[in-house]
Length: 104
Image (cartoon, rainbow, N blue to C red; front, side):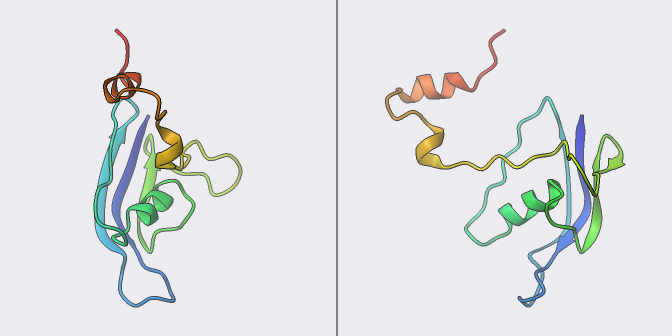
């Protein structure tokens, strides 16, 4: 599967200015991607647009070359992370990092 964001822009009506403009992103199902930046720079908003939770002001989101469904089940989902619950505090850091690696 390939998730693409093409020329995405977004702004909230109640705020002036855009949250992000002209963003292009392509992630294949075999890849891992991270959005990094300071608080308030649009990481969560971009994720919501890519998951179909918010419509882009401009651009389009495609999954395998087709638009996301407007109703019913959407195969792209948000997985919220709570840092204190996402990592087992009893594990050593090396074990935590190894837990996310694929075993050959």
